[in-house]
Length: 401
Image 1 (tube, rainbow, N blue to C red):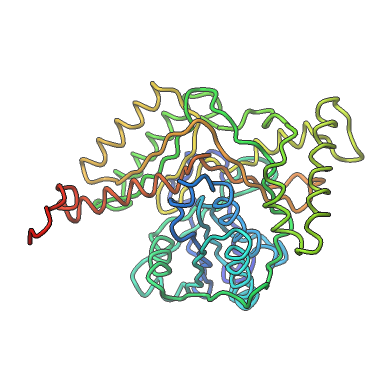
Image 2 (cartoon, one colour):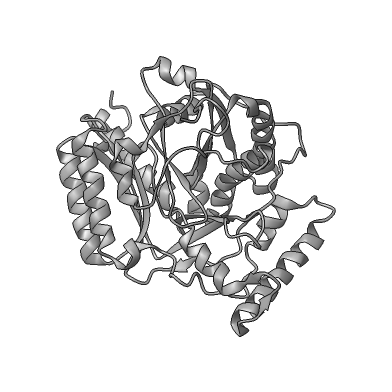
């Protein structure tokens, strides 16, 4: 058996290809003791989303994954995209490089996207000292990519510690830039076809991540699977190409210096036009086939995941959504789960494409009007109400004790 304490931990994990496998504990293996969790999130992301900056928020979250993987020479390491943040598990051999990458991406997000990013590096030793764990599974939605699933409660604990100011990675000096090669945001929002795009987060409640919660997850997956392609928000043939340049500025900010930015924006715009023409007329350019690229894009997308709880952004009709909500409410009333849900009319895609000539490009899906961040906010509000019912009471009049 491979030594799971080395840098190849994730690559050596067995792959499962049916998403229902997220409920099978046999698919998960504990992260090595000497590894670390690189975690990040946007401060006040809901305010930024409310002001229409959802593309910038998603770009910031994906930039953490891009910066860390590029710092590690695009090795095979487990990560998860959370909409307004991300987590990447890294080996100790990459700690210094990742610390520098996190510091640089924090500075870049502040200076170029005008958002505030928290970053931290949390040792697994500290996670396990709390009696928690990080167990990782490897789900492959296509023949070309795989995504990590996380369980054990340790990832959620690491995020809480970061928000409390522990294990912080401070920002790099001004104008320091991470390597964000491959990060892009070129697609228009993808409209719902079944009904609505719904972002769902369901996490264990008092009963913990035991059989009852696993049954809940299995039930939600089963209902969503009744929809065409399991509720996948991206059509099987991929999103429709359009001459859309809205994301070019953000991508140029990610991949070019100020002096070269105008040239980079022109290059991105030219690429968008060329791909549009190639796709429209069915032309192949060397080894690049636009139609194959779009189909791979759909197949490689991460619209479902397990990150100490179920997270899905699905295209679902009213009848199936009603059944999903009813099952979630039932589980919440029984203390099995807490959940948040956010409806919107379209999905948003942020991409990590080291080279379009290879078929292992990765695509991160979120709701186009806040998605996971808004669902998480709904979940937090429920938790506050449960801890302090007085929060739901009318405000006291002035002078009332």
